[in-house]
Image (cartoon, rainbow, N blue to C red):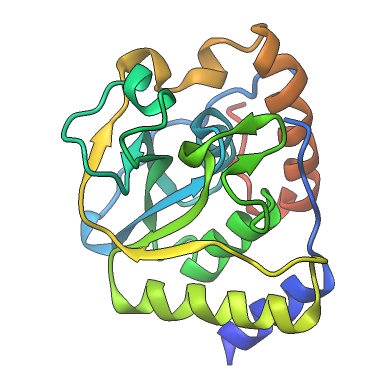
Length: 216
């Protein structure tokens, strides 16, 4: 079964990609997408700048939008979320073409590019807004996420148990415009150079066969 193969492969090669500078990649040419073949999932894996930059580079990912989910405040601002009182997590809503990339691959990248065992923290980013979370949009996403957690915990992939929140998607609020496409627009900014850049470098080596082709 394909799902089992993906989880088995993941168990053999879980890699911690934590420090997140390399030059920005050339963007691939826009392609026509049949939206009937797309699926949407909302993921929180720490700072949404990192998550966005990673998923933007995967072949088959149509759109990545940084924003907020999982809280109780409508239309939150970045400042409100940073105050840690809204209940929201920083997330990316990812639209992907299922004819080019599978849900297995989307979740495999998720598990390999952050630490799902640290409560409300990724590296030096601390707070409930940085929690590990899967906000699933359908039962397939829920079931596969839970399968991954069960298999990874059983394999002792991490020294501590996975505490990723797996919750039904409810609402998504897009972050302010300056947060969108952040790494590509701010490559020389300190956080981008010293945190996101090295993380992307490791990610691209591991998932080189899954990346978008560079424009000639």
